[in-house]
Structure formats: C-alpha cells, structure tokens
Image 1 (tube, rainbow over the protein chains, first blue to last red):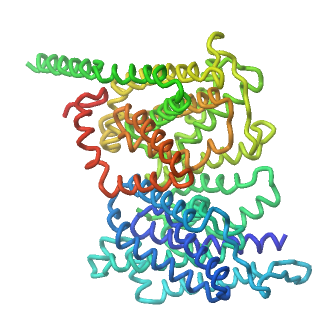
Image 2 (image 1 turned 60 degrees about the vertical axis):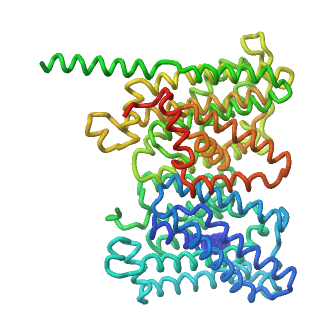
Image 3 (image 1 turned 45 degrees about the vertical axis):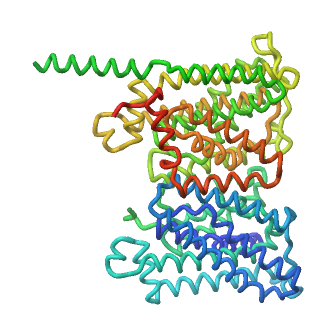
Amino acid sequence: MLTILLDGVAYGMLLFLLACGLSVTLGLMNFINLAHGVFGMIGGYATALLMNRAGVPFLATLPIAFLLAALAGIILERTLYRRLYGASPLDQVLFTIGLVFMAMPIANYFLGDQPQQVHLPPWLSGRLEFQGVGIGVYRLFLIGVCGAIAAALQIFLVKTRFGAQLRAAVDDARVASGLGINVDRLFAITFAVGSGLAGLGGALAADVVGGIDPAFPLKFIVMFLIVVTIGGSNGILGAFVGALLLGVLDVAGKYYVPSIGAFIIYFVMVLTLILRPQGLFARGDAR
Amino acid sequence: MSATASVAARNRLAAHLRRRERWRWWEIAFWLAGLAAIFAIPSRVGLINEILIAGLFALSLDLILGLTGIVSLGHAAFFGLGAYAAAILSSRGITDPILGLLLSSALAAALGLLTAPLLLRGSDLTRLMVTMGIALMLGELANRNGWLTGGADGLNIEMSPVLGLFPIGFTGQRNAALYSLVVLFVLFLVARRLAQSPFGLSLAAIRENRLRAGALGISTSRRIIAIYTIAAAYAGAAGALLAQTTQIVSLDLFDFHRSADVLLMLIIGGPGYLYGGIIGAAVFIVLKDVISGATPEYWEFWIGAMLVALVLIGRERLFGFGRKAIGRLAPGHVQA
C-alpha cells in the first residue's frame, strides 16, 4: 500500500519536472507547446548516450542533460516559437505537433528506433526495506531530487525579484510590460529553464519508462497536458499537486483496478475540465 | 415604402441563396474525376478507397472546425467508435454493410450528442483537451475490454455484399471504393445542403463571433451541439466504412495521431468550403504513399516540416490566393 503510494509519488515528481515548464509557458504566454516532450527526449538521450558511449557517470550527465535541453529550448524559442505568441491556438497546436513529427524521425535517423537504456549505478539500483515497506532506492532518489527542485523553484518564485516579475507577467503580461518588466526576455529565460527541467526529467525518467526512444515526445504529450489541465496553468504549486495526484492515481489505478488501466486519469482530466475549466488550483478570478 | 424595401431585400436574399445552391462545373468535374479514378487506376484502388474514407473523416471535421469554428484534437473518438461498432455488429451477425453503417453512425452521433455540452464552456485550449481526453478514454476502454473488442489484437470481420450484390473487401476492392464513393457523395450532398441552409449561415455567424451571434437571437449552444452531433455521425460513418472495407479494426483507430492527421488533412485542403477535407486527404495520403515508399521510417518528418512551414508562412498567405479564387466559386461562400 505504502509502496504503491511512494511509487506513485516518485512518478508524479517525474511528471512534475517534465511538465512544469509547459505549465509556465502556458500560463505566461498562453502558448500551447505540444512539443515540450522533445526537450525531455533530448535530456534523456544526452544521459543515455553520455553514459553508454562516453562512460560519463550518471550524476555528472544530469547537469549536461539540463543544459543541452535548455540550449535547445532557447534556440527554438528565439528562432521559431516567438513568432507564434499571438497566433491562434489552432496554429500553435499545428506548429508544435509539426515539431514533434520532425523530432521523432530525426532521433530515429541518428539513434535508431531501439530504446536507449540508462544503466543506473549500483548504489541507486537496490531496494530498501523499512518497517516492512519495500521501496526502490532510485524511487527515493527521485523523490528527493525532484522534491528539492520543486521546493527550490517555489522559493525562487516567491522570494526573488525575478520570481515576482514572472508571477506578475503570468497574471497579466500586458500590464507587467507596462510596468517596465521585460516580458520578452523573461519569457526566453523561463522557456529555457522549463526546457532544461524537462530535459532533466527525461534523463531521470529514462530508467522508469524503460529507456528513451524516438516516440517519447508523442507518448508523453498526453501526460503533460493532463498535468497542466489538472493543475491549472498559473503556478508551480498547481502543476506540482496536479502531477503528484496524477502519478499516484495512475500507479494506484493500474495496480488496484488493472481492468480499466489508464482510463482513470483520462476520466479525472475530463471531469476536472467539466467542473473547473481553469484547473483545480487556479484562482477563481482567472481571466 | 418600407414594405417594398423589405420585399426587395427578401428577393435579393432569395436570389443570393439560390446562387449559392447552384452546382458549379468544377464541382461536377471533381466528382466525375473521383469516379473515373476508380476505374482508370485499378491497381491503386485500395489507396483511392483510403482517400475517400479519410476525405469523409476530414469532411466531418470541416463541419465543426470549418463551418462552426470549434477546434478538436479528438475527432478520432467518433471515427474509432464507428469502426468498432461496425466490426462488433458484423461479428455478432449483422453483416449487412448498409445497416451496419447506419447503426454505427447513429451510435457515434449519440456519443457526439452526449459529449457536445462539454464543448460549450471554456477556451479553445479546454476544447482541445476535452476532445483529446474523450478519444483517449475510448481507446483505453477498447483496450481493456478485450472480450468485446479483441483488445490489442483487434478484430477481423466478414461482411455481406452491399445490397446483396456487390462483395466488398479483398476480392472486391473496386466495389469497396465505389461503395465508399457513394457514401461520401451522399453525405457530401447533405453537408452541402446544410452549409447553404439558414442553419449553415447561423453556424458561420457563430464561427465569426459567437457573442454577437447570440445577441442576434441565434441559440448558439443548441446549434453547436447539433452540428457536433452531425459531425460525429459523419466521423462514425467514415470509421464504419474503413472497418467494412478493410475488414479489420485495431486500437490505433483511437490514437492521438489519427486526430492530428485528420486535422492536418483539413488544414492542407483548407477548411470551410467542404471540398478542403477531401482534397487534403488526397494530397496527404498520396504524399504519405510516395514518401514512405522512398523512406518508410521518416515520412513523418516531411509531414512535420510541412506543418511547421504552413504555420510560419501563414495559412492565409499560402492558401489565401487559392481560396479566394475557389471561394468565389464555392458553395458555402457568402458574398461580402
């Protein structure tokens, strides 16, 4: 019981890392980025390839995964995404699906369609028994790392000047820019950090989802969107709670009622949209 | 004075509606070309059948996106439901294709009616999510209820000949394509009539400005529900056609990429004038056939590149010229 709960929490933490960038992009610029999973894939591949081909230790690959994904994010943002900020949702969806369709064959072309495995170091791969509750060490590691990152992000958002500017821009970008906040630059930085976090999430998720393969961005689109939907799109906290809820529901649902499987999470998503179209944790006065 | 003015206005309106109704020469040529293709290229008749079915599917999306301006990322829900309904009906003994088609289509319409109220609230983003969620839910249901749907293995089915005369399927691929063409044509006629009716005009009003349409006295919610139900029936018919003519259904019918593909087809052909979906389906499927013939794994790349280019260059700029030319001829066109 507790094992499942912890597994669910670990999975939820991963989803949070993968999706929090998306949640901020959506809140900040009303931009629907279906290609967010591509950055996760970049991070995952970076870790897998560095470990398997260059023999870099696992922990050392994680910052590289973050940086590579962030770099890819900022390049794409400056060259392509920014042209579409004012576009209709349909155009944004078409454009980002197009990016996903392009990224998958590129990955396939250079790296093959076999999943690239990430082999965890021995100190991360065992199981712990604690008062009769078994939990994988790696799951604990995930909870620790992701929890720390989530806490850091939240503190950053609440305590720093940049965080305050970001929150202001999420609330109302036009007024924020009128107050002299450089929303354009703010968005570029946030986009890069969000992409980097997705990259880190992809690197950490590689083991849990059975390796990184070219279909990764497409497989996870749905999960991301559910996180954002449940959590609402204006804050780290909403995305965090949404991701945890989704992780626990998904793992527990697949364990206790395997006959309906993933049905539960889709159902919860649609239910959320019916009852609270702005997301569970959005403030009531959302536009 | 005002009476004569209103009579004149009504006459002008009637003349305008009649003008819209008239068949253009290129419309007739379009359908004759479709018919001719089936007889002229017997070796690729399977591909033509695929185009016709995808065209019907895209036409159904055009009803909600092109005519009414409602976005959807989950149109595969109705397509898949129609296909599975047709397959399950035939595996339970109802092997008559036309009866199966009607029942499957009605079932899809029922789902459309049931889910349409979910589209009335929220933003475009909400609608994209809700429609996608429903398609995924159905896919998962089909996956988990193997006793009914065959689960991951899908279903293989046998169909009776159409009208008891024309066998469809592997032995009668030409018949299958003709059957699809007839269904597509009949449904197209209905859609054309619908688009030209006052009902169709009210949908255009909703598309252009829902608030203002409401202020004009159009009950927008009801009309959105109505057109969504009709579109669901069309998508269900397309799914049923696919199941009946290929005699196989599988879980990928509900996949996200189905919904994305059909959206892409409609965008390629241009939404809003009913032929766009069919033209887009032809372009899409022929391109897919040609590219995947050369590089089977990488054809998605070119589709993706096309989408990106389409959006960056701008749909209006790319197709605006063609649409303006066609728009003047098109049945749904409103003279400004």
